[in-house]
Image (cartoon, rainbow, N blue to C red):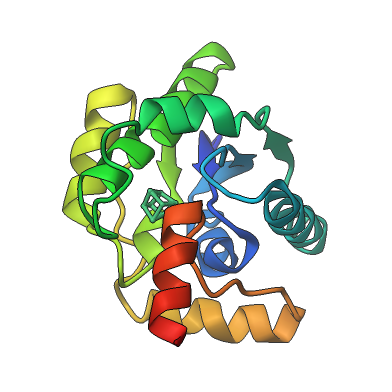
Length: 180
Ligand code: SF4
């Protein structure tokens, strides 16, 4: 039977490692890198390069959305000072998932989903609610069944770069404060 076409939004290479293994059994996967939240741009390019390397290793296609951090900043304006996990992140998910949903619909995908649920720091219920709101979303909690740990192991095996902050300049500032 022909597999359904699934657009898998990935936030970075490491978070996509185990989801690819898991989801490709049932779906025809295309990776989608839409992450204008990442700052600075050099970090964006580094994460994109690793995502591309993973796509080659796993033999799955990858599409990149245009990077527009200024537009993302305008989208989250007013919630810059929110702690990680709060309103700024909710807006951030809506921004990236909205772009993924539109790409999926415009390009004949049956469903879309995201690797964001891999992270133990991210609220899967919030992500599911946003995904359902913006398009034909596949609600799968990728941190379940030890998904996060399995992803870390695969990332080590592939020698992928693993960042130590979520992505935006506000999360980087929070990380720097914690490190001090
Ligand atoms: S902390 Fe992460 S999820 Fe939250 S706004 Fe920044 S990049 Fe987006």
